[in-house]
Each structure stands twice: as structure tokens, then as C-alpha cells.
Amino acid sequence: MTTSPAPALAGLRILDLTRVRAGPTCCRVFADFGADVIKIEAPAGVDPNEGMSGARNGADMQNLHRNKRSVTLNLKSPKGLAVFKRMVAAADVVVENFRPDVKARLGIAYEDLKAVNPRIILASISGFGQDGPYRHRPGFDQIAQGMGGLMWVTGLPGQGPVRAGIAVADSSAGLYAAIGILVALQERARSGEGQWVRSSLLQAQIAMMDFQAAKYLIDGEVPQQAGNDHPYTTPMGVVRTADGWINIGVGGQGQWRAFCEAIGEPALATHPDYDCQENRLRNRDALKDRLAAVFARRTSQAWLTALEEAHVPAGPIYRIDEVFADPQVQHLGMAVPVEDAERGTLQLVGQPIEMTRTPAAVASLLPAAGAHNDEILAELGLGGDEIEALRKERVI
Image (cartoon, rainbow, N blue to C red; front, side, top):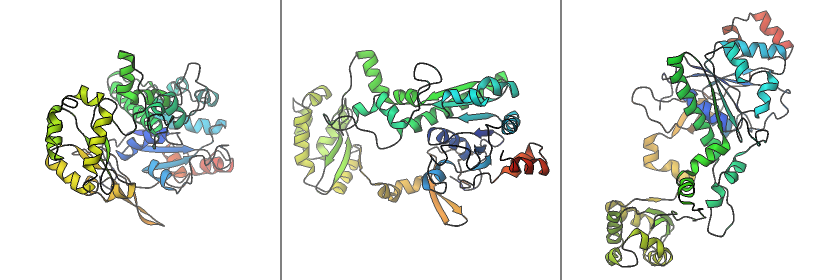
């Protein structure tokens, strides 16, 4: 990942009306690959939920909103709406994550934007969808984790529902929206027309359930909590060593035989209780007890070395500081340096996509709110006196 602006999406203009996590995650993809992403936010004192995303100079805001320009604009005022529509006329994509009814009240629903620019793509991210019985409900990540089935399969058996430690629904909804925008852009190249792209936290969370959801839909089986074990394959999960824990992953029969050799228990490979995946699952608890005694004899690093030599998947279980100290993570460049005028060199999380010619880049941090007001409004053809009048009227 480079630190100069990325070229891949140069020339693409995205108007970013989003906040919190799902929408900013979507827009960050485009910003990191060189699109002109303009973050549009209300002037100070206009938004009743001002500050709900956290401190502007905090780690989360800087990581989510890097590589953007910033405009303050009061969309509730007629003049602010008029300025926004001028921006829409020169844009490719608008991304928003208001509640579904808010767009219509503001006059920025898809049909409103399409009337200004038939090529515009509107991407809307909601909690539960743009229509249906739950359309008006506010949504947050944990609500979608619960309704989408994730919390019922997370945690130790019998523990009760457990929230995943990351914002799975938020982040995946943002990424699905980005995929939808890319599809719409490709289709527009042929048809010349934009369209309305929609994603929601609930849909994204259900999609992320993937094989467990398919297991229910096809076989009628309701998955339960499996703790650190894989629900359908064993041994695959966490084992305790002499000085900590590691993950192991044993898939097919070839890996099972190699695993038994590597841990010094070759007889396990052909033991009638464990000689195939079906038997290993049936006797999982007994197998776990046998493996617990074996893995307690050596350190984590000793086991990782032995399993790597046997080509058996295994890995350490890191705290986040250990993640970024790992040599492979450092080689992949997942901590990206960026300069801050006051704090010096900061590091943000890199894009997990590598490109041979047009890599992503983190070139700038989140600017002050409205830092590019004059610049962007001048690009729309507004003169200095007009811009100053909008400022005095608190439109910007």
C-alpha cells in the first residue's frame, strides 16, 4: 500500500452522507482506491445526534474517514438542499445510511436524485431494509447480530447468546454495499443509467451466516453454540498448551494422519473411534480429552513448529499488539503510516486487497469539518460572495 493518492478510481466522485460504521466502511473502499470522496455533514449545532460517531480526532473516526474531503451542509434548509443537488449533478454515487423515511423528508430519495442526474447511483444502507414491517426501526450492529442468528451460535455451549467481538453486521453491510456500487458502475458503463443499491445490517448478517444458514435451509438443522470448536469438523479449534493456547485445523483424512504423526500419536489415525470424520465428531469429547493431555506437554511455539513441519494448519492466538508484531502481518503492510500535522506519524489499518498496478493508499487523515467548503463550492461554480452568504446563513 502506497502513501500517495491511489489511481484506480481517480475521476469517480462519491458523496458520503454516512456516519457510525456501515456507511463509512463502504465509502472507505472507494477513498482508499483513489475516488474523490466528499464527506457531507451538518454544520455544528444542526444535527441533534452530533458526535454519535465519537471524537473526530479519535482512532475510529480517523481510520474510517481517511482520504476524504469535507463539506458542511445543512440539508434541512432549501439553500442547502439546492447546493447538494448541484453536487449530485456532478457526482457518480451518493451513499447514505439514514433511516429509510429520512430521505423522502429531506427530498433526497432516489427519484429526487435521478431527476437531477439520471446516471447517479444511490447506495442506501439501513438496519432492516428500505421497506417491510421493520423499515422504520433504528438498527445497530448488535441488534442485527441477534436477529441474524450470529449470537445464537457464538460462545460456549449453554452459555447463552454472545455478541461477536467485532461489528460483523456493520462492516459486512458496508462491504456488500460497496460491491453493489461496483456492480452498478459496471452496468452503467453499458446502459448509461444509474440505479438504487440497497443493503442492510440484517441482510448482511444473515448472508454472513453462510454455511450455518444453508444447513438450516437445506437440511432443517438449527446450529447451536460450538464454542471454539468448528461445528462440523474436528479436531478444529483451540487447544491448551504448556504455556498458552493455539488454534489447530485438521480437515481431510490426509491431514488427520499427518496430525497424529506430528503429535506423536500415530495409532490415533486408525483408532476405530476416530478413523473418519463422522466417528471423530461422534466421539469429539473423548478426542478432546486425549488431545488435551498431549498438547499440555509442550509449549505453543514447539507445537506450532511441529505442525508446520507436518503441513497441518495451526496458528497462535494473538492479542491485537501481537497481531501487528507478527512478521507476516508486517510483511503484508496492514499497519499503514500516515502523517498528522500535530501528532506526527500515525498508523491506520490497511486495505486487505493487493493490486499489481493500482494499489490502495492512505494519503490523508480525516480533515476538519468543512475544511474543503470553499474549494468544493468553487468547483460547483459558486463565487466567493455566494459562499460567504451561505456561511453567514449557516447553510454551510
